[in-house]
Image 1 (cartoon, rainbow, N blue to C red):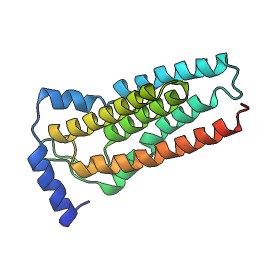
Image 2: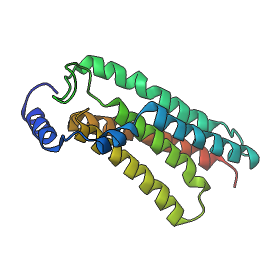
Image 3: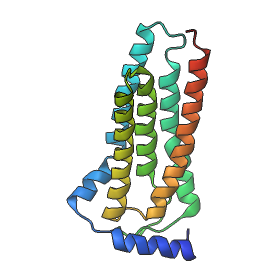
Image 4: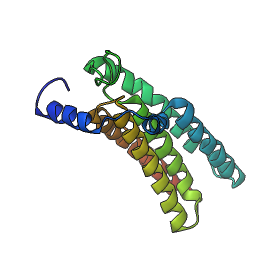
Length: 184
C-alpha cells in the first residue's frame, strides 16, 4: 500500500489511465451514495412489497439484510482508510485515506444487492442475465470513472471489489438459506 513493486505497478497504471474529463467524473458519480443508495432503496421497496403480497414468511428479511449490508460499507471502509492512510493520486488535492475506495464499495454493494434481490422475481433467463449485466457494467463504469478521473489508484478500486465481493457473497448465502427454508 505504501511501497514496493505492486505500488509501483499501481502508480504506473494510474499514470497511464488517468485523464480527467467530464465523462469519467459522471461515471465515478454512479458510486456516490446519493446515486447508488436510492437505486437500492427502490429495489428494497419493490421486493418487500412483492414478498408481502405473496404472503412470504418473514417478508421483510431480504430487504433488511441488504440494508444492513449497505450500512456496513462505511463501517468497514472508513476504519480501513484510517488504518492504511494511503495518499491520493496526483490528480486530487494532497490528502490520505484513499484506500479502499468508498465509492467502489458503495456501488458493489448497492447494485449487487439490488441485483440479488431482483433475481428471484425475474421469470426468464434473459431478464436475469440483463440485470446481472447491468450490475456488472455499472460497477465497471464506476471503477473506470474513479481511476480515469484520478480520484483513486487502481488498487483502491480492486480492494473495494474484494470487500464488496465478500459482502455480496454473504448476502447471497443468507438469501439462499432463506429461500431453502420457504415452503414450496
